[in-house]
Length: 287
Picture (cartoon, one colour):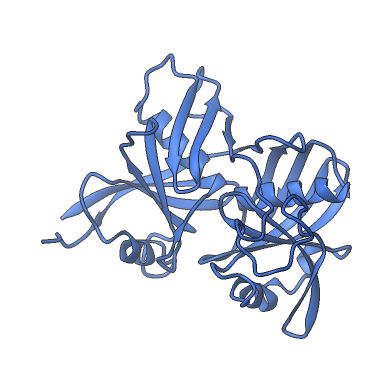
């Protein structure tokens, strides 16, 4: 049996998308399809389902088969698929998408569905240790945990913890992010015992009040060319430190993402999202 898929990318963060119109072992399928040598190759599998809470439901599976609660670039690519395949009518200016982390709102310019700028709401950031989650002592329930000293592989990193519906640990450095040993330290941070659900790890260099450069080690995927929720978490942590203003360009290896956060409400992410190609994939029917 063959299933149709679409390959999409947002700033180099790439995904395979399938419409979930039949029961499948999504975790196993994600591991097979996302493999860059023996599969299609992707940073994750997006599955589109109907929703009784919103217009659509999105589930996200990492290349290791684990399921992610949230994915900012995935949301934009998911929305692009909806637009180019005309799953909403031409007068629609907003899409609501159900995720594990909550319902997210997507806005776009309806004039050009293939090239329209897509802005997604990632919800309000969370800072409570139990909500991230991180097994670190917190000054009080309302104070973010910033510059927490974490020793991994013999290296001390000052970490700031943020949840964007998924857990993030952000380390600010004055060195060029290209020189940071992410391949060595990323797995150690991701799987540290401090994080009961593992963690996404961002290393960031502040360029100005409006620009940050980052690299990201994603939980269940490794280093990726971009991470929307990681860019958002970094911008939030940077603003909490007083490093940046409310409208930020986040430079990632795959391009530039735009983050807006007023310091209190929801975080908004804008950036590219394009269809790369479509195809069919053989699967065994499940009994």
